[in-house]
Amino acid sequence: MAGKVVVLMGSASDEEVGDRVRETVGTFGVECELRVASAHRTPKKVLELIEEYEKEAQERPIVLVAVVGLSNALSGMVAANTFLPVVTCPTDKGEDLYSSLRMPSGVAHATVLKAENAGLHAVRILAVADKPLQEKIEAYLVEARKKIEEADEQLKG
Image 1 (cartoon, one colour):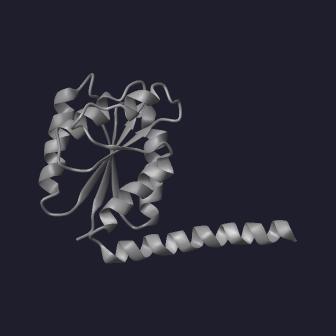
Image 2 (image 1 turned 180 degrees about the horizontal axis):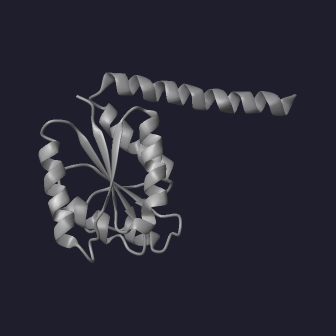
């Protein structure tokens, strides 16, 4: 069954980053949903969303992407309260990058700085158990290499 990526944002102001994650995920034909819940202002909602997606994960794989801005409370809170994989994507503002990189022992998540790469990493996690998705990623990588080779050929004349 096809997996799903859920982008959790602490604020609607993070939507631009969330949209870039969703766009990348969508290029692989993977469903992606954006949600807003703050670890600081709506912690109960964050926990409710975790519970909702853990239930859904009984039917299909789910990867959570936490878009974080001023602090990394959201992805830390999410990673500490779920078995689902969590990818942290700091906003382009980079307010507190170190809070995304330094988590206490046992609070594990991957930090990816570029929204497009956060989406790609989430898709790669889903691809572990999805052969058609693996093939799409392989085709993507071939195309990326091809673009570099073409650029090199153009420059060397």
